[in-house]
Every structure is written in C-alpha cells, then in structure tokens.
Image (cartoon, rainbow, N blue to C red):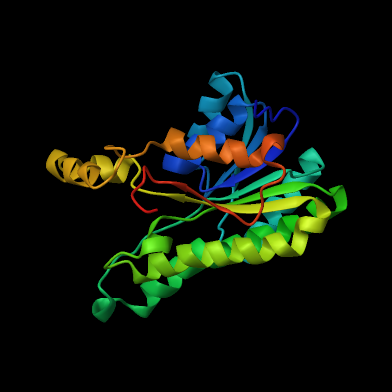
Amino acid sequence: MFDLTGRIALVTGASRGIGRAIATTLASRGATVVAAARGDNAAGTVAEIGAAGGTAESSSVDVTDPASVDALISGALARHGRIDILVNNAGIAKDQLMLRMKRDDWDAVIATNLTAAFTCSQAVLRPMIKQRSGRIIMISSVVGQMGNAGQANYAASKAGLIGFAKALAREVASRNITVNAITPGLIETDMTKAITDKAQADWAASIPLGRLGTVADVAAAVCFLASEEAGYITGQVLAVNGGMYM
C-alpha cells in the first residue's frame, strides 16, 4: 500500500521536525524527494534518506520570496520533468498575546505559513494541470480549528490553509489534482521536548488517546493522501490529534 515509486515529491520546511519526517517517509515509499529549506539546511534530511537507500536532493528556498520559489519549482521540473506531490509544510510561530503582538510578527507568520503555500501551489499548478495529476497537501494545525490564546497570528494562518485547500480543491478537481489539509495536534518535536515532563504529562492528560503525537503519525497521513489509495479524497481536513479536537 501507498507505493509512491516514480513520484516526484517536493516538501517545504524539510530540514527538521515534521517536515523531515515527511520527506524521509515519502522516500521510504519510493518517491524521489526534493527537500526544500533555507540555505543547505535540508542536507541532513537528504543524507538520512540516502543512508536508508532512498533518493533525495536538497534545494535552497525562501518560501516568502516568489522569485526563490519560482527558481525552486523550475529547477525541480528541469531535473525531473514533473512534480507529483507538493507538501506545504514550511511554517513559523511568533506567539504573543494580541494586545502585545507586533504587526511585523503578524505579517511574518502569515507570509511564511499561508502566503507561501499560495505561492508554491500556484507555481506547481501549471505542470500538474498539464500532466493531469497531482497531490497538494497543506500542513495546517489543530490550532487553526480550535484557536489558542497567544497564537492569533498562527491560528489565522493555519485556518487560512484549510479554506485555501477547500477552494483550490474545487478549482482543480477536474484535472485529477487533489488538495487536502492535515491538522496535527500536539506533536513531539524539539520544541515540545524542551518542555518539562510535568507539562508534557498535563498535555497528554487532555488528549483522549493519552499521549502526544509523533512526527511519524503526521508523515503517515501525508503518505496516505499522496497515494493512489486516496485518489477519491479532496477538499478534506485530516485531523491527526489523538482526539484533542473532534
């Protein structure tokens, strides 16, 4: 199941955490992965994929710069001839209570988390339409569904990805392109590992399945939506949150 052999997958924010797990898991299913991040930050991801016998390349991109995105997409097309899967994963957080939030922090989060997904998706649409197939997957967040104090900018950007996915799905369905969003809940990453054991236990107690999620949980969901088995699923939100939000 979920055989991605021969597929070309582009993952933004692929240097660490969820993005790295997505890239390595797609490669383990046979996809050739273009791991995109700032500078050479995705080199470690590519090395991990290569060590496991997969195929990947590191590409530099600033997702907030349309020229950089265009260079990324055109380069991938020149090397591989097609892009089958786009995972819009790049994201940042600049948390602050609304009364104290700086406009620059609002703009930066919206630009990286939401506008960049628009730029990347628009750049891959023409080749996907030409080949009459494609998978576009947005990595949103449970925060975009339920909100969270101190994260107005982050929640707005992640909620925006959900609406964006649904609208775009309607536009491109006739070309056999699916567009879906995944909403991870509390996931074990470097950020959560820095939190005290008690805080992690308190978080886990609020989740019906009794634990934080793993990056592998999110990556598995991406592989499913990228596969042929998910060919009749579009415009949907796949929650990977242990029941935290239903």
